[in-house]
Every structure is written in C-alpha cells, then in structure tokens.
Length: 237
Length: 237
DNA sequence: CGCAGTATTGACTAAAGTCAACCCTAGTGG
DNA sequence: CCACTAGGGTTGACTTTAGTCAATACTGCG
Image 1 (cartoon, each protein chain N blue to C red):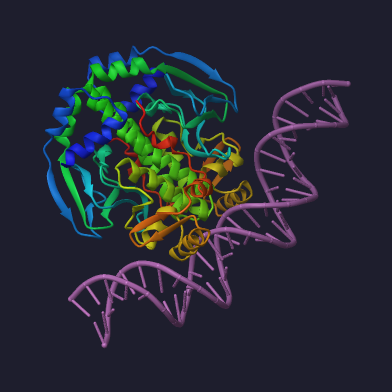
Image 2 (cartoon, rainbow over the protein chains, first blue to last red):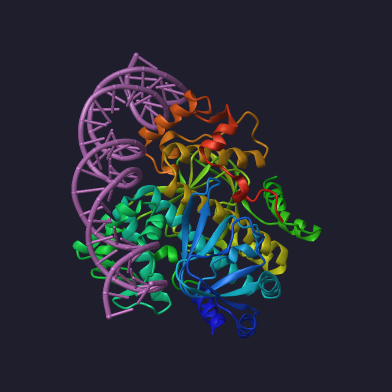
C-alpha cells in the first residue's frame, strides 16, 4: 500500500509511536496515474495536495520566466515530492513525470491536521523536507565545483543509494531517464553527457542503459564522484 | 533585540498568535561574536544549537572528502542559518563567518519544545526551512543553466531583495564578501568573476565595491539574471 | 615602510557547447 | 508483415566560454 511506503521512509529517520503510525496510514488520498511527459503540478499554482510517488520517476523543474527549464530534483517511489508545499503552497516549480507514474495525492489539510495533532509527525515531515534540502545543497555544490564526469558519477552514485533504500538495487538499479533529461539534471548538454557516459562505460565504471544503470565498479564510481552518502542521512535519528 | 529580528522574519510568512509571539521572544540563547574567517559550526559535528545571524555575513559550505569547499548558501542578519539542524543534527556542511559576525546560539531543545507546544510555531519553522530550500533549488537551477553573467546578476538581484526585506537597502546594499568567496558561490573562478563584475560595472548595471553593491540599473540587472523573486516567497501566508 | 590579502589584467589552454549528420529502435499504419 | 517515422542516442568538426598561469597593482594595517 502506498502510505505504508511513505511510513517506511519516515521511520528510517524518525521514531513514531503506534498511534502516530496508525494516523499516518489513515491519511486520505487519491491514487492517480500520470502519463509520461506530463506536468502534474504546474508553476504558478496554489497547491492543495502533496504528491507521494508510488511508482515511476518524477523530475522537479525550476523555470525562469524565459521558459528555460532545469531539473533541480529527481523523485523515486517513496518520495513525497512536494511535501514542502504544505507550508509553501505557492508553487515555483513543476512536477513532471519522466515515465508513466502512479502517485497518491494527499490533501494539505489532512497533512496539516496530522502535524498539528502529532508533534512527532510534524517533526518527521519537517525532517523529510530537511533531507530534501540537503540533497539540493549537495547538487548545488556539485554543479558549482565538479567537472562533467564528477557530476554524472555523483548523481549515479546518489541514485544507487536512494534506490537501495527502497530495495530496488542489486548490481544496478532501474533508472528510466533519457539522456536529455539526465543532461538537464547535471547541467550539461545532451551531447556532452553522452560522451561522459561513454567514458564511464569504457572505463568499466558504470553503464547507463535506457532504463537501467549497471554498476560495474562502485568503488571507482564513488571516487570519481567524490561521493559521501552522509548528506542523505540514511538511518539517523 | 535579536529574537525580535527573527520574529519579524517569521511573521512575514506566518501568522502567529500573541502567545506564540511571546513564547518565541522568551527563547533562551547565547550571544556570541565570531571572528572573521572562522567556522563556527563544523562538518561532522552533532549540532545542539541553531544559529541566528544578528549582524554580519555567513556562508554555508559544503565539503567533499577531498577538502574542496563550495558555498551553497549565504546568510544575512535575521536568518536562522541552520534551523534545519533541529531535525537533522548530523552536520554535513559548515557555517563560516565572512565578516566579524554576531550570532545568537539557541538550544535545539528549546526550539523543539516550542515547536511541540505550539503547532503554529512548528509550521513557521518548517516554512522557514522550506524557503531556505527554495533558494537552494534556485541556485541549483542557476548553476545548471545560466552563464557566468546570468549567475552573478541573479545572485546580486537576490541579495538586493533579501537585504531589502531587512530594511538594509536603498540605492544598493551592504555586501561585504570578497571576490574569491563570491566566485565560490556562483561556481566561477575568481579571475572570471572579476571580468564579469567589470562588465556589469561597464554596462552601468551594478558595481560591486569591496563591501557594498551599488545598483545602477535594477531593471537590467533583473533581466540579465532572469530574476523572479517569487521563489523567495516574500510576504505569503 | 613593507607585508599580506585582495583585485586586476593579459596570454594561453582546456572543457564544454554548438551544429550537423547519421544510426538505431520501437511503434504506427498501410 | 513490412515500410515509414519519430524520438532517442552517437559521433565528428568546430566554436565559445571559462579556467589556468603569471605578472602587476592596490589597500589597509602592523
């Protein structure tokens, strides 16, 4: 069940009591299927729901007034992609399905009510947003200071950990993103990204297939991306 | 008084009742002076306090294990620079004074207690973190998609708004940051940043003096940076 | 006065972007 | 069942942007 997925996510980093867990699982929500290549939250909206990703892959886009779009976050199953909209409902980004995606739309009112009645849940929500921000900070640092290879390696390493946390990884992980979108996420042109991926494959580090990443030598991937998973706060109280 | 500054900040975006306002102002805290060029929160620490910037300028640094540092956020008076550490106390960044800085160190326990007793304050804290994340997202997008001039123009425009919100701007604003640090914040080398600043000055857009930014033509600055202040959520409920 | 940190400039290099062609594959409709 | 098409991926040749290296100037302070 979708909410159980999110409860599991929260429980990784927050201790919740029985009552809180039950209250969370009782949240109302509307299951929705989103076609590929569709914005399901648009810039300029006033949000009234938060979207839990149940299945699929979602990009958060920032947009300048000129219409340039840029991916600032990727969301995988178990992520509440726009939980921050509960406290900042004026939307300045878009959520876009990169594959056919199943989401659960949960009313802000319900989330807010839950947070008000259960301080522990309020803290868990806040913490979930803090981890999201921590990832953003890391992306900012990567874009500012790493070269193309380092940025790509770092992102592939990050996604390996994140898919690992939801039990979707072994020698690799599902990652159904096009090179155009991946290029956008790491601030490169698709052409240059393609060359970087080619090099990672030739060097025996990792292979990006159309919807899967094969990890050939994770140690070297981590070194190439100077990756340290601490910012993902995996399993901290 | 320092806490009044922060109360004012929160009140811009959150409605707080009298009791909540009083409780906030009653928070305990230790006033501290930080020398220039000093980390006052270090990577790897377990944080027990959040730092309210009272006076001065602070940079948040991300650091890779190789020791490369990169500025991911700038904090001005009125900012609670590491409020997120209340829910994520394992520190993966550093806070560094760019000028002699006065801070107020507020115990996490007090902030947590306040949030537990007053859901409105909990929401206000969460919201404050959401705006911080919104700025991070914008920086990510800028680094990914804008050229050097656009990045610098955007940052100068953002800081103009942020200093404006604390009443420290007229035809310009105080911005005591060196070119080396500014270069770090926008992901450029100091040499190239210097050339960009020269161009902004020559074009009559803005002049960066050692500790002040003179805004010569704000409209063109905004255009050059494709700046839209919506992400700062100025004055939204 | 001299030093250290900061800022400025020029000449050169390297990384990434641009442009354009071509390939490959999955899906469509005849 | 096959030809066509469109989107994604790949490659080469060339351009542009920003980085590097190095020298020089400025400024506030001991």
